[in-house]
Image (cartoon, rainbow, N blue to C red; front, side, top):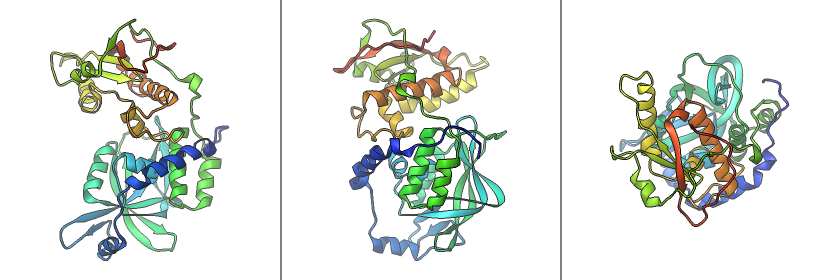
Length: 345
């Protein structure tokens, strides 16, 4: 693994991770042991699927990244029937540029550890959609009792794969998931002590929007009307209390049209006309903060971090800056003015 002065410090997020786990414990869906046994009696270690006589199907899924973390699973409405740690021989896990996401690559003689989950067929189908840059491949894993099983893992399908560094947030999610599911401590220590990473930003380094019109406030009802479904109204989104307007698609013959169309079709149904902080907190889980229970259950620092992520990932990373305009703030009881330092033109 690459040499770097930056290594993971899990202690910073330990307490909030414990609180997050405690807050979801009563919300998790658990089958009774007899129901689990009735499913597993049809298991074949040489197959990644379990098919019951009544037609129900279940899939063995090998998590190599954030999906080995119970909070990440919960935030995506995934409730494994069974989960256990394994070693995957003849493969290695690699973090890919530019975002540092985990990928699996064939490497005879190598091995790495992760967590296997048994999911319903419906859950696996939803996961397929979430993992849009990946495709399923079958791999053999071995549990800590020496039993092998065929499972599905995801590998990236992007062209020209290059090696990158994971973010500290992402590696923290992986490590805490490994600890939660009792992955071998030696492997966890390797991730902590050897894996180079991109360090977290400090709060004073967070980017924020500026040039917000003075005294321009909009209600949640006004925000909701601008959800992108009415062709006469532009799409709005609210990030950290600040409302941005999307300029819309360029003409069909514009060189950026197809890219903009794909972005809009993905973005609009998820975030159009909404306060997006809670949704981003769910989709971009950060162990430093306790998972929010609703839109109001986010700290000011957590919201500021989400604003920084939105600027970095949505605005600056994809030429989107030319398509967004700050138009005001959301009218609510805790609305505050703040000093900002990112300009949209």
